[in-house]
Length: 186
Image (tube, rainbow, N blue to C red; front, side):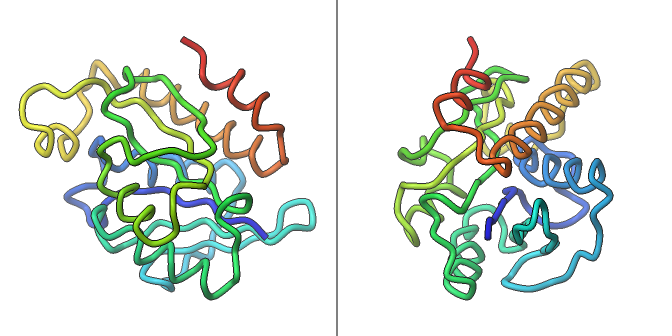
């Protein structure tokens, strides 16, 4: 059993914002693999499927970013998921240039409130794909809840496609060192 969580904020208002890159990556993965049947459960929107004989859950918490840990904690408790090896979180990172990815196995929140919330519930040991949204220009909250510029859309799309590839590799149990070599390029 595996859990893939994309972080973001619910609602039309936030749909295309920088903070919703995690939702965007999950949505692109689901579209690419023609997966549907989204339900509301565990304070989230969730799609359940089987890939290569293994049950996989795709989760988009609907708790708003700062309370993402509530939704993640609910599902891992219910299904007895081991977050250290059976969970992947996909989210935005303002400290990475737009278009860059980073794969990590554990670590601090790096100031990301969604990750901070998850860590407060389950600890720091879980796999992550961090998607670069570029450095802040002015107020951090306004920046992360702002939409991408037209000039950034092509780079955003390429990054989302790479994030989907990262999700696929993680589901296929690719070795963590190989994942880091592939996705943590300068």
